[in-house]
Image (tube, rainbow, N blue to C red; front, side):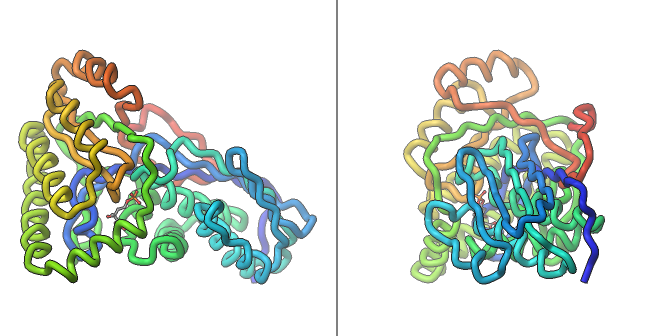
Length: 336
Ligand code: PMV
């Protein structure tokens, strides 16, 4: 049993965009992901009254700090809280004198829109719980967060939790694991949210069925996705925006053939491309959610403002290189 600190803990973790390789990454294909400067923050405070009170936006959940009661509280409306509750649940049983917690979750990441909100909430919650007794070991936190995320999305590749924990721009390779990339130039990504929430688990299942029903088509798409991802990595390393843009658009076409796009995503991609973006694709699970467009480093403001006239819910995101932060204030200059 571990003694925990009685103070308050603040922990935050970034959302992410997937530049290349979503869905195929579940089948051990490579992927490129980036943490973004939109975070989920979890504030924890031991309250001594034997209840866990979780406030997230307008919702408040009050559950007894007993394992049985926590696991009963699972309905569709609070599904996004399952992993959060699970993280708290698992870790509280390692504490000798656990007697309730106040939990406040603040989010800058829309839920169910492909920007890694569930991974970020798991990472931030595990980080906060571990922070209560001063253990900020990122690999362990990442492992626990992946386990929690698998409660709602059991085939999760784990890549979202990795990038949220460690931050930065990450290339994932099925045998070599994760490597941090350090491209020569800054790439600008515009994130456009459709407002159509998706269910990652259902979309991953849809792809699983596609793979079972049409194995040769799936293999062909996956093989091409692998080549594109590796070419995009090289393009990024040499600062080649045009090639990266083309690879992103081609990756989107593969995802459309995989049947995970949505008419709204197609419309947004067309708008971005006809207004000067170098590439555009869905990001995350698709079926709604969000898309990203690569905006050239020249005429950036002009292009962004013409896209934003047609897609108001679009924003340029910065990459985040901090990942999980526990009881720390971020220095905005360190974002790249
Ligand atoms: O839509 P999101 O943010 O849940 O991202 C899902 C990414 C997938 O590749 C579709 C699944 C995964 O586990 O990597």
